[in-house]
Length: 79
Image (tube, rainbow, N blue to C red; front, side, top):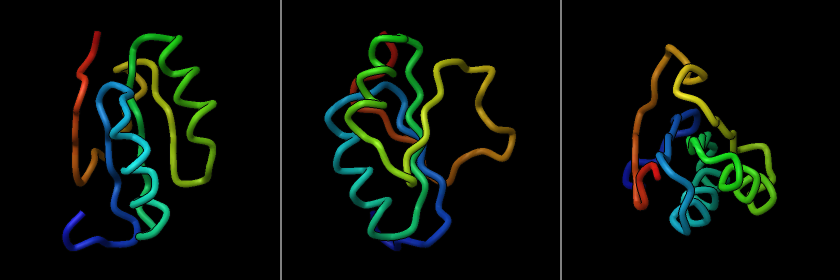
């Protein structure tokens, strides 16, 4: 993440191995990572794999916050 800033809100669409690198960067920079995946099994896997204060999980498009995100990434997309 070039130009890392504390408080930056990141959204990863679809849980994938990219989440591990993003979670590490979020911890290091004080950013907040949110993972969106509509598959309940993938969200459960993400929760088990990425416990920590800098990672949140969303399993519905309706649960997206209205405030938005500073960066949105996807490596796997929604299945």
